Amino acid sequence: MDPTELERFERTFLPHMRAAYNLARWLTRSDQDAEDAVQEAYLRAVRFFGGFRGGDGRAWLLTIVRNACYTGRQPGRLQESTIPFDEEIHDVEDEALGPEDLLLQKASRRALVQALEDLPVEFREALVLRELEGLSYKEMAEVTQLPIGTVMSRLARARKRLRRCLPEQMEGGPA
Amino acid sequence: MSCRENAARLLEAYVDGQLDLVTSLEMERHLSECEECSEAMKSRRALRSALGGASLYFEEPKHLEGRVRAELRKAAGPSKTARPSRWRWLAAAATLPSMAILAGALMVMSRTPSDSDRLNEEIVSSHVRSLMADHLTDVPSSDQHTVKPWFNGRLDFSPEVRDLAGDGYPLVGGRLDYLSRRSVAALVYRRRQHSINVFVWPEQNGRTVAPGETSVRGYNLVRWSRSGASYSAVSDLNLAELREFVRDLQR
Image 1 (cartoon, chains in turn yellow, orange):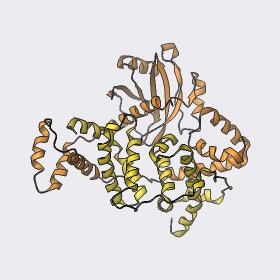
Image 2 (cartoon, rainbow over the protein chains, first blue to last red):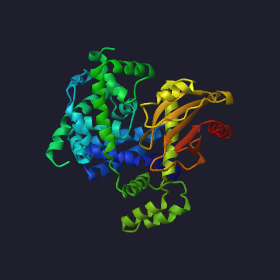
Image 3 (spheres, chains in turn cyan, orange):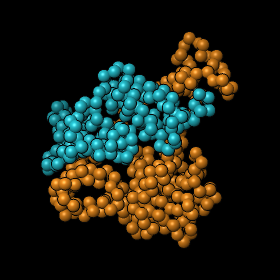
Image 4 (cartoon, rainbow over the protein chains, first blue to last red):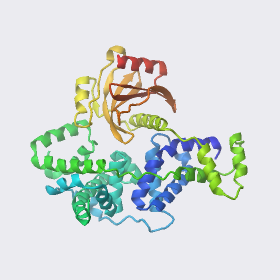
């Protein structure tokens, strides 16, 4: 790759390193693994740069970061847990959640991090992409390579689980 | 709209601002009538604000960019084309035993994009995305009195909205967008077949955007601030007309 092309690649993608690291850190739950995954992702991205059609580099890069996290050097380290196949079916019926909502407002950062890290990885991923990266459903579908309906139901289930398990975290230690 | 069938799933999309305008209005009407759904929405809003309020973002370590740059250069390998001379001594330095020195040198020499470069880049990307994804407006309307109220409840500030049809820049509509980790208003105008996106967000920590003009990947960008709000107009329109548009908007 000639230097000008490499510089173009860097101009396009290095500004997204912050997002890349954040996603990798949440998926791998380890500083070191996140760094390795980001580095691996950039090396893959530069190889596939020819296939990048311009537009939003962030979603494109995050797709590769995600794949790097799932297929890292330690195979099997991060595996998609098998969510029952019925996830397309709406299990988002909602019981009224009263006291939990009040608790939410008092949740400390530590309790939130712990509750998020305890979620199955695909739920955690959905929440990070949506709440922290602010991706649209369409971008989330692109990054996770899932149909938009699945993206939506995962997000709904992720939020429901988080609402349910957050109070447990908060009882576990001083907030 | 029946709660049992649709509302639960639509509620998520509504809170995420991902519904089209018609469904969104329908949802608003439903929420005003249905206590159950309106409670469910409150609980979702509470979760969102808890997640948004805690700083859950993991910042990348300072050395990571240097490390990645060094790896990228290694992977790119020696090029057949002549390198710019400033890299030549680095090629010699690569033979030094200490890779740490090289990594350090690369970090110092390579240009780090500034915050404003990043913001410009983000703004242009948002503009391009709005055209590509065919998602220019959430609220298509040339009436400023329709567009402005639409942002109520969707943003924590109220952007000034003006139609400039009389000046040859008709308002096309508004849209929610996301820049620098915050929701912003995007106002869409048209000049002939060119779309103009105007991004508006309030000052943050008492700071607004530095005024200026720039060009990124062939798009022109004009930034200014006014009454505590930051503005960025971006378009493939030529700079002269974009300046004129900004002047009219500020009038």
